[in-house]
Image 1 (cartoon, rainbow, N blue to C red):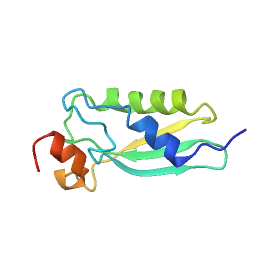
Image 2 (image 1 turned 90 degrees about the vertical axis):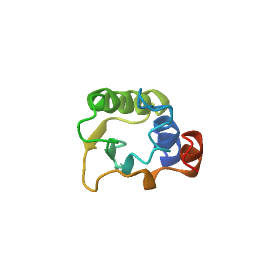
Image 3 (image 1 turned 60 degrees about the horizontal axis):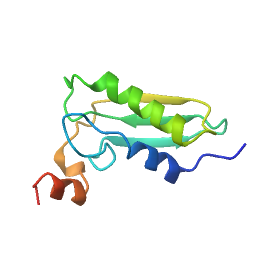
Image 4 (image 1 turned 120 degrees about the vertical axis):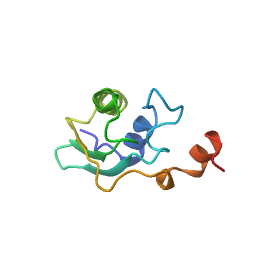
Length: 103
């Protein structure tokens, strides 16, 4: 079975959006870590823009589905939702900052 690539997984993650912010979670800087294991399972450490964000569960499920859909060789997706270090707007890409009028 073909090994999933980090590039393909990141492309899948760019399809995931916080419903309240029109920027994908990669450009928002919500992805802290990504590991592809030997068994083709994927580990993703991510955060939310705020710990009390009501769409946290939705985003985690969206991430799992996007990776499984775009990367059929992935056997499992484990998402670790963390809040340390806390997210700040500094983590956003320049494109995201520009889109949100921050540049």
